[in-house]
Amino acid sequence: MTTAAATASGEIQGRSLWQDAWARLRRNRLAVVCIFVLGFVILFCTVGSLLCNWSPHVTNLDLKAKPPGYEETLDRETWLRHKYDDLAPEEEQRFAQALKAGEGPENVTLRHWLGTDTLGRDLLARTMQGGRVSLMVAGIATAVALLIGVTYGAVAGYLGGRTDDKMMRFVEILRALPFLIFVILLTTMFGTRLWLIYLSIGAIEWLTMARIVRTQVLGLARQEFVEAARSLGLPTSRIIFRHIIPNVLGPVIVYATLTVPAVMLLEAGLSFLGLGVQPPQSSWGTLISEGADQMETYPWLLAGPAALFSITLFCLNFAGDGLRDAMDVKTAKD
Amino acid sequence: MSALLQLEDLSVHFPKKRGLFSKSHEVLRAVDGVSLEIQRGEILGLVGESGCGKTTLTRAIMQLQPITAGRIQLEGRDLSHLTATELRLARLNFQMVFQDPYASLNPRLTIFSALAESITARTGPLEYEDIKQRVAALMERVGLSPSAALKYPHEFSGGQRQRIAIARALGPEPRLLLADEPVSALDVSIQSQIINLLLQLRCDLSLTMLFISHDLGVVRFIADRVAVMQNGKIVETGHTENVMDAPQHEYTRALLAAAPGLRRTASL
Image (cartoon, chains in turn red, green):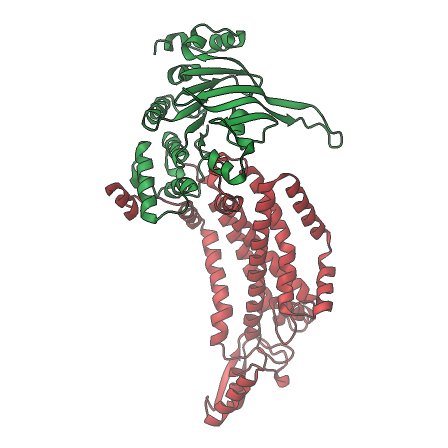
């Protein structure tokens, strides 16, 4: 059949709503710049820390709290110590081997671009490492919130009636639990672990996501195309995942980009209180809290991490705004 | 002729909401004891003013709306006695064309996906090549070029969208097409095209149709028989000419008198 062949080769390609959204997003300069800056921050925290000569963990009590730009001359052993810094046994072995093999420069002078902290650790390396933890918490907690929130909200909104009532009352009960007490309870039961932070933050954030999605779905479920899908006798799960959820993705993506900064702030708050990331690990939250303690004597302890954190939040907010506008089909109506 | 669809004393009531705590026992009788027969191969026009229960009646036939009382029989089989699987198959015999072609197509699905979904609703999973052929055939049947299959609904005009919606309704090979004001959201020039398409489909596929409209001119043109609905009740049924030219019920007379220019289109 020739007509079917024409269909297959797709001679006349349609522009999907996503392509439209992308075109609109590109017109929003600020949002595009912010997305690029975000990408740069992520690269900085991941690739940057591979390129960095300093280890975030190696201490040097002779070089406590040196200002940004301070130069340190390293001998070969210290240089290798910074290279193979992990406390894991195999890194220790590799350090010993490298030392024996005579690897590395004899004497080298390196600069602490952001200075050192009160234990003589390089702040730039610590900021990168902290950024990885912070971004990861943000990413995973937001993904958890998305996954649970969207599914839960869509099911509640689509089924409606008593099921909806019960499901949303449950959400309200969870919302009423004081977050800090919940986290303190978890940490006393399981000890402070990183996955606990993911879990507890995700467990809070999905509630709002579920309510947003449910509200959207309540309107959608009455739409004629959903009724058409029902008259085809499609199973409820298929209607929800194929017809409902794709149509709420716009607001959901926008809310997700706004959730990321909220999650990072929560993690920072938890770490500030000592409930979050534990030393020697750092996160932007712990770095800022350490910096805030010494703000008057050593302001640079605060400056670097706080600046990066603010830039990231700023960009996330503007990128989220831009995405919301781009996803809004009404602004696209020619 | 024998009846394809039989409605017996069909009622759909909605509870009227009062306050938060006082439970009201008053009900809104959207459809109130409707008995109707649709013969195989005929087009039955259902007319009445807005809010008289036309749409609720179709939604009840489509099983989208639980019925309060009465029976729906498809070829003499009561739908309420069927098991879930039987009901799922039985209701594929009815498909619906909605009023607003801008709301009745999922904006996130290409025409191909939408039609493929409706075809496989009856047949179950098919080979990709097979689906492609069937989709192309469906699109040609409603007068669309199959090369547009990969487009999204927002790239089509209202008339084209209504054609897509009709194609989707034809996907599971229904025997009864319920058309709920299928042309009232369209331009007048497009209306006649869609009407002619529906008439063509009736010939080609020997479809039976329930055609709902408040436009008496359109109904006069397309329908073999007419049922007039008022406040959830059928007040008059009969052959189109009889009802239109010699209305028995005063509500029908009022409807006809209110229709602008009907006397002139009567010569259609």
